[in-house]
Length: 329
Image (tube, rainbow, N blue to C red; front, side, top):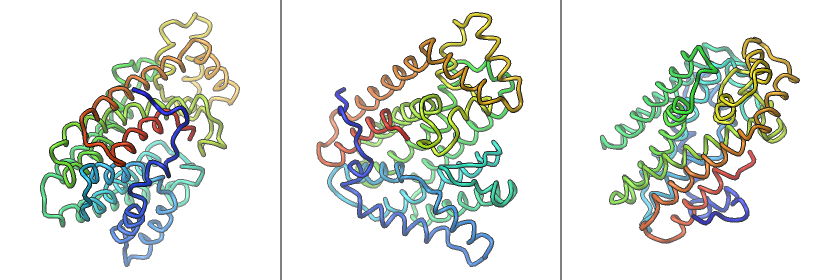
């Protein structure tokens, strides 16, 4: 695999489908619209929280792989983003997070109850829209992804021994919580535009999701709050164990391990304690280990695209791999 020397901008990746993404945003607004004022008020705020449309972009790029465009793909792209957004709203409520992308979460502005209800609303509106397409296969794909994400969240919630969370546990978790929806996004696009390549694109999306999440977990150790929109070291503050820490735990000296144990016993660890563990992980090679695992997943994603029709859509799918691994936010 030859990744670009400069990280591609998402605007470059989305160039082949830029106008269609505008239609996806319109679809999102149409799908979530409600004449019940409390719901509509939260929806209006949620649309400000929506991300960079990375997953909807994958749907559209896979749809265009064979050089054709299908209107249903825009609805499927909107549904994919809404399922993703519903998951984030629920996750923030479960984690009692107060910030998402630098903005207050729904649970912080309203309540945890409102956040759970609104996540359910987004899910249910998505199901209503996908059934209107009259095809069972997209329903199977998105339902399987939603189920996997739910199981992943429960797996994380009931993991009482955080520091006993091993590398295999970590991969199972990110496969459920992140890779499942990216795989679904690519498979949904294949259903409309490239059915002969459905399996390859689903594999691509899954490996891309692994690379994306490992890189995201690295950002928690390397980026400051001005870049991520959340405090650096937030995973550690919330006692979440990700790959960089998992990699170094077995080889820590007793004194260093004691510092990690103390942080995880502290309900509200101080910034200094978090910074010490961040430095410890970097010094013992945890960041480099995670980068290597992200690169391996990126290579598998690249390999999954081998033999697919060349063109702007395939080039953007390749660039999406570099974006996932090298992005700084």
